Image (tube, rainbow, N blue to C red):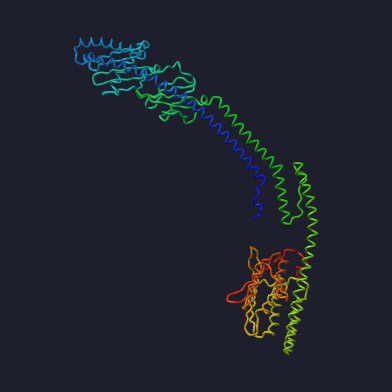
Length: 578
């Protein structure tokens, strides 16, 4: 595994640190913000709930006093019955008595304002009104009571409801049957101690439908659309978060009391602190961004340029140099030292490169000097063997074909020949061997059209054939040798794929293990020198050790696959054809 993959880049680390710092700051400020907001909201909620409960208690207490006054009137049931069964004179006396009863009942509490009795049978209306009520308002109250009779021909629910009479709002409770009506009216403004209200909290009284009856107290009051039944109970924010509101239902009628506090009163000075906190966060983000941009300019960009230059150098561009006019003194010194170091490295690499080329050329010359004498020694051994068999005609023919092979070997001192030349030499070599093994070898050679001029190492096919004739061909059996060459892709690169097969006994397992381990050994008697030299030649020319594969075929036989790139890795006069 590349150890560099485990390293983080400088800019990535700085970015992570900056983002982490911002996130931490935002989390801390958010926690402070939320905690402070929750504390202030809890305090405002407690204040609102207390104010709501007090105002609700005041309202219900006033309504309760008026209910008790009505109850005391109902206790004088005898006078009420006179209106139904008495004579006209008796009803007149009962009317006088009813006025006194209403007055006495009103005296039971200072919260009782207006009590009315309306005999529907005799159309007798009697009322006791408060001291602050004018005659015109009294007339309007009577008119409203008569209107209620017309609007409710049957019985009326015995609970408090809202009614606007003239310019004033009243809480009304009315007992009614088919013969009479008895009720109490309280001006809404008298249900609460308005003088005790502050400009911080707004009190809103609504009816059962949610319509606002009256508002008092605070300077900023919520609109009717800001209030609904959802605020009954715990305090919460309105839809626009402009008011903190809580409310409760009256237990004595269809009335709702809501108390609210504007946002500015809930948070008070914390709103200014919120703006300051937002400003601080924005300033911190801006400073970090400026610092990041500065770091990118004076640190990351020079590092990126340095890394880019190093990659170009790795790809072979040795003329790369860094600008010595850097933004900081440190990087100016680094760039100057880098340029000096590159000049030194280039000079050293050039000398090393030249020395390596000279060494490779000497090595290849040595390899070729081994291959060619190896072939000559094999040929001399063959001639020597045939001389003992008195095969003079065959010796002459053999020597003639050998001379043609020698001319091929020494036609030039180069190491690369065309594929067609190597194949033609292979045909001559097979014909030469036919003298030794008449009728024992069947050969088939197939070359893909268009690749006849493809450059391949000299004596590549020859070396493989020598190995086949030495270890697979015998006079007591027919041996097939197949040679093919075609263009195929290997590792994404178009190469010449050369295949040489035979149906002999196959390679020894020891040899295949040595090949798999990359350790082809030359035996003491010289066996293996040809294969070793062939692999060495491919490695020197193409700088790859995976271009030759050996294997055994089923049911028997050997196969050699050779992949030949079009270009060699090092340019030298040795790799160029004449």
